[in-house]
Length: 152
Image 1 (cartoon, rainbow, N blue to C red):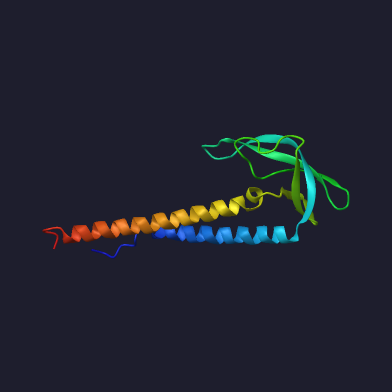
Image 2: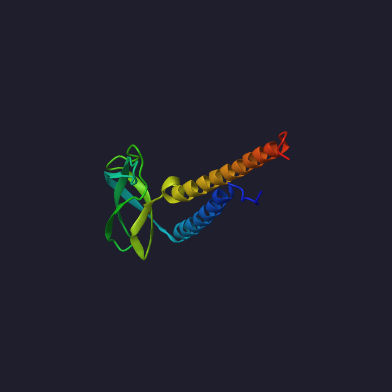
């Protein structure tokens, strides 16, 4: 019988690529957080948007305004959406922004800043585990079939 590659190998390679993507996202967010300027913002509405894809759901994205250090006012829609509005209209929220990119400001919350990085990393770990379990099951089946009477 030809030497076959373990079936979980592809899953583990995909997980490695996802961990690299998570590392890149982490590096960007770390840069953002360590260089950002703090401001106070105000929620002006919650925009209902499709989450995309074939099985898309609808998510509420908070839209907030804030004033930068030069006094300019910006209105920004958060890239982070939730199933129910996370903030009420008129609510004050902490905001982080880069001086040279104030239009890319983010609400200063754990999920808004680190959520995507955590999701990518956790999904990568899950794929890695599934790949290992798949390989072990395949090896076990292969061993059992080679030990079966009449298989020699």
